[in-house]
Length: 293
Ligand code: AMP
Image (cartoon, rainbow, N blue to C red; front, side, top):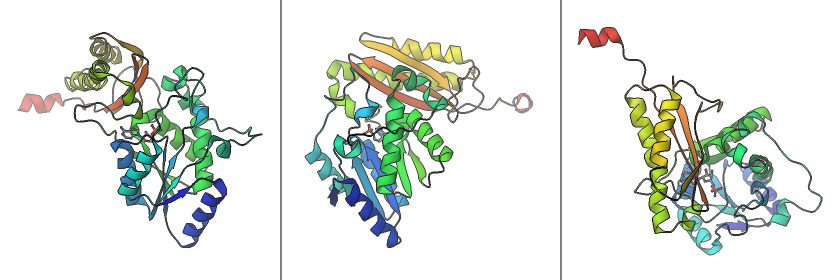
């Protein structure tokens, strides 16, 4: 597995692969890898001949007072996991390599970044879209894999790629969960045992939303009331948002009439945790069928 730290070297290697006719797959990460990341690497492998994983804790996507400096890092372990997962190369730049002195260009997607995490973390998506654009220009991937765990990020990247005619296929990957349902996240390491139990309420509230929708409930306010009841059923959890939105446009849903994103962000202690589920919405039962049966 090649370890590449410099932009020029990565671009050169990408050119060589492209000249050889190889399909390049990219998995952008901030490291402290877990099974969720490794599932993305595996998915990239099925779309590409060479898989590049980038590890870069991107300062511009953290707001003031957020956890940039204490974000968990363990490079040796990450590299070992990536070797075992069969990655071909790891791109490991420093912040100065990505944002050299004088850097002043940013990429901004507007509408879909406004609600949800964009509201709570105003400069976050601008940091994400800028760094992802740079990674695309550096690694030159044909395909890039992103997790649905960061659903709004995935929607934003798809929007950016379409709007800016970027020649990269965006592959989404379902959320990978722990055995008890907690969505895997590098930030789970911040949780103590009690908080870890509290965090399970995110996934439970999403399951409760689906169960309610399965009974035929279509009113967003009723579904959200249920979600919040489950989230609030104990101490030490503060809801940042719990919303129902269209899974492509992220427009707010009033009545559930098709697949609907239920998106959550909470603070468990000081740790911000997000989770989501696209709710399956049953088609209206056909009254004539019911009458006939
Ligand atoms: P991060 O290192 O947290 O920036 O995540 C890097 C990529 O891994 C992003 O595309 C995330 O959406 C994805 N990811 C993180 N956790 C999970 C998970 N539990 N399941 C699926 N994808 C994930």
